[in-house]
Image 1 (cartoon, rainbow, N blue to C red):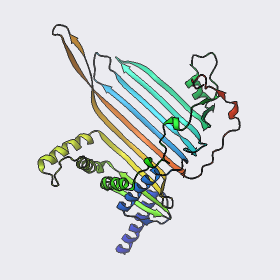
Image 2: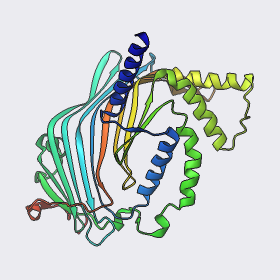
Image 3: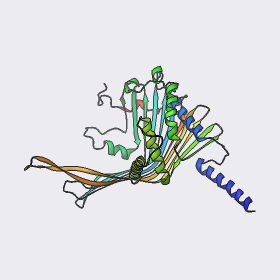
Length: 378
């Protein structure tokens, strides 16, 4: 009875973990991590070499970043500072025929919430540098026939903040356009040129160098669902010491540093000291990276990164004064602590890549106010 119960609980646990890792209860096939990592890198190289200049991607994020700087008491004007940034929104970008005869692009920025607050405290007095908050703002931009078009009509609060204080006789229109030039003038590399392609020998070399590093990741899961390979990388605070040490040794060896195959006690103590110093700065709650590969087209279709952690940095400002009597500069060290608190979930979906993408422009582009003369383009 106990054996049967243990067996049932084990099966249920495996099923629950699989559902948690991949967000899909449909049965998949487990893939060895080395095979998954190799496929991932070959996919990356394949996408780099794709020559049809078209894509359709959507990026969504719900992120909060807080930076606190706590300076020691001093007489040199250095105070405590705090910056808080909140971004909740999405971006959709479409590009068609990038290196062809009629390149087109469309960008939609949808801001659910965007907040920036920056303050400083000096001698007990608080100074506000920035205090801005926007909700429900939407910006659209387009590129066609060497012209860029921008539409702020659904982002009037942001438009007012950006352009309201401009020293101009006429207010900035909410819909405007300007001559910006050809794609070639932007300096974007033409991937249709043979010299822009990544040779297969370089791909093999890249895999040979990076695969050992990827294999160090302690919690990697890979499964095939139909034609889609899903890979999940996860880290905990407890994973970091061994991972950091492994990265340090691998990077040192890749740069031809003399690291013996068998590390003696003296070198291990030196490595441990460096690892401990790094670990004293990191408090990781969550790190999870999930990516999907469409094996039929050998391209990435989905990325999601979840990160929740705190980085604490001990540093110093350096100031001082000129000692007239001794004709020397006396340097003063002012220690400070910087705490960076990050909580983010960001997802990138490739809806189309190197395949036909249809872009539909608004019918009123001809009515947008032409700013080319003001931009010095005509």
